[in-house]
Image 1 (cartoon, helix red, strand yellow):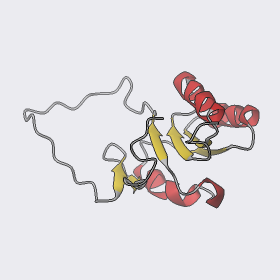
Image 2 (tube, one colour; image 1 turned 60 degrees about the horizontal axis):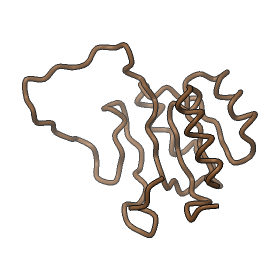
Image 3 (tube, one colour; image 1 turned 60 degrees about the vertical axis):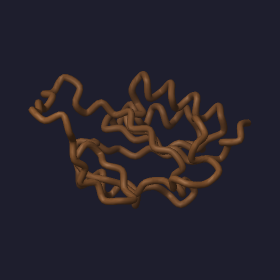
Image 4 (tube, helix red, strand yellow; image 1 turned 90 degrees about the vertical axis):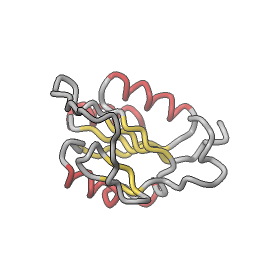
Amino acid sequence: MTEQSGQSVVLTGAAGGMGRAITKALLESGRRVVLVDRDAKALEELASVAGNAVFPIQLDVSDGQAVDRLPDAIPAQFKPVDVLINNAGHDIGGPFPRSSSRSTSSSTTPGTISAGGRGSMPAPPTTGPTSSRPI
């Protein structure tokens, strides 16, 4: 076990190849993982082999209202969330917005994490003993 053992992680894009590999590494390090993916069948399959240290939530990160409800869907035993890994590839194959400006502005409310302009969720604490440690 590592000193991060017992941390809770929210992982989007959990049911794909990279998500499965990340899930495996997180579980091997003793973390609990909230698996988030839009593919219900793949998500349930992953959850069925991963054991009690995971909690699956079907969600499409391109649905801002669903993202806004995500914190309420996380069960108490997986809170507080220590780490968010935004692995979902919701823009794969889609258009990439062009901008003539090199600067970007953020309308993210302090204390939240933006989901690509499609919603936000409360951010994990940015201070404390685990905030600067690598995963």
